[in-house]
Image (cartoon, rainbow, N blue to C red; front, side, top):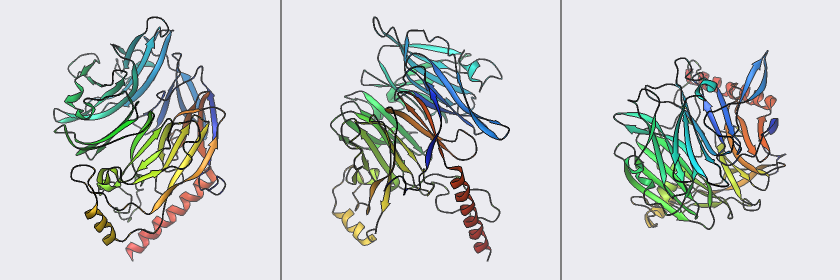
Length: 454
């Protein structure tokens, strides 16, 4: 399907030229208590900019300013950045930055963690940038990530950092320290799935499901990848699936096909509409996206139930000099997530799962009974009828490094923030089409309400 025929309509609204090139770990987002979002973009030469949109007399205008984080020397090369809002009883933003100092001669590596250090500054980035806790590292840092762990009866957020020592390091805040202090703790205390790795982890993706299960996906430099189902409270690996490909795994993600949405509050509207929550999610809902430096990108559908049996190759994804980054987003507003691929060959590709006639339940059950188990307690089911098709593409002037899909303008409509080797691109949907689609959906919801009343 050509871009002209697709429902997807993303055009570049703004561009910001970075002072130096970024990398695949150089983009992160921050969500504030009022629901607004900002993004931080790190360039290799130590500069970090904050991007937000401000409403000036009804017109949204981008605001880009440098944030001066302390204790990052002038000769530093920033490797990765991540940020989160504290969970539990704590409040405020926490920002983590890894960098290499004096990379050319006698390199040393650091992890700087910034958090509020004075009352009233919990969400003030300029103030937070002055409160630094510095950790020297004895390994080359890679992907900096955060997730929640269950500790002492409550949930709290920790940093995970993959390294050139083929390990994943965990950094947890010391709650009893007067000033904000983070310390490294044994990884196996909370993440046994990262034990005994044989290669450097290039990308991690973790999903916590209703506090009962954790899905951890990891992709390694040697082409090895693994997905684990973990009980976060007993810290027990329930089962895992692994595979091996040629070439480095550049990105790996666990995802649902259906997008998660918050239902609008309309008087009389049923609360159990399809897609209104994930409380009924089953193991067959989880799919695995694996991108490589040299091979086609692959989706393993229903991976927890079926292992690696339902394999879908994204056609032509290997033709653009390697897929560098991935993103899952419902960019055509049909309730199902599309797969977005960013290529070093200056391409943004969008793939969609196109369904066809499904097998009947009896056929599925028969194949499930006859199949081989790929992981303990799971039998492969008949694969879905359908295929992934490229439904939209866009060419950029420079290689694509990273991207996130979130609402920067705080108008309820998400934008695509994309980092290339040249700078930051903000891609926006057609607002007239969004208005028409919103009006159409509201009419449908009101009709459902009226039908329920009658």
